[in-house]
Length: 370
Image 1 (cartoon, rainbow, N blue to C red):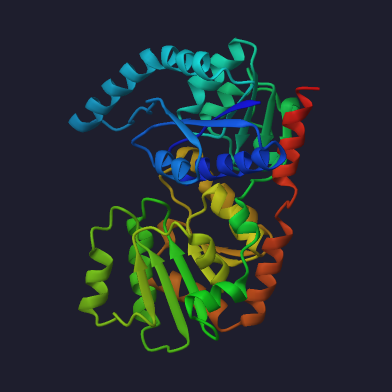
Image 2: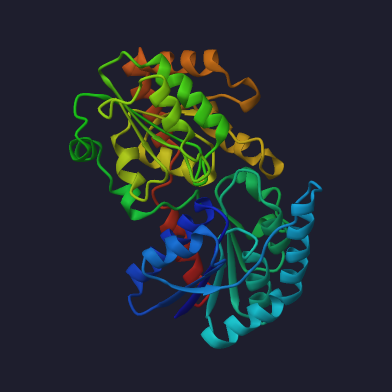
């Protein structure tokens, strides 16, 4: 079987695609799997590191605000759209897929649509509680649509095509062990805090974590791992140095963590954005969290993702407009001072995870060939 998985933009699209690919290879070792995405996007590095073939196709989105730079980007987007169908046809003709799966990102659009028009079996996976525009439009053309929540199915053109399955996570997430991870990182007996603002980072999250680092500076029982993201440019470490909070035994700063599963497993409390994949990983691992949804996303979908765990009592949700020193430190103290609450929140998060997610996806994909 030849399978194309189109995914791009963020790890929240790419990693579910990788999880689906892992399942297909496990069940069908002779399957040929190729990912399609932007070579300049993070998908190229993540996919090739995982050992899968990668085909480059340039598809970008329109910038809504007007500036000389954005006008230039929009002209490039128009050029990409004009050549996207031809590029998709070339990839399909050369690889001859039996199945094409769109896992999100602009690149999913042309490759999935061209495959559907040619009668090739097609499917989508929508990770968010509030469905994205690309998947809404594509849902009427594909054979099956996998959605993370019942709510997401309501926004698709054909809800009857939707199969509620949750979000698939990589095997390294499902198999990660807290005790092993703490031992590996040398943080046994410590309260471990992990924080991150997404693959590129987030200035507001970084600022809040500076405030939290100041708040916890004299606590010997806390180890804080923080991921600043690509665009921080050393500002976080500079702040720590200026405030003499540079003890590596207390706080460690990273631009990106490729082995983040280990750090998540070791964490007692996680502070992060509300990307769909992150919510799935928090649930899978059974982690108490403080969630800060990004307001700079389509349809405010991160807020809807975060609300799923908040309503279950598995997370504290702080909207960015309310994010200040008081909000973050009080939320942290609520968890830090009550280990039993942290345990109960983790259990509630775990109950929200569907361990058969990737099995459901695989079984329904294979049904199309019977």
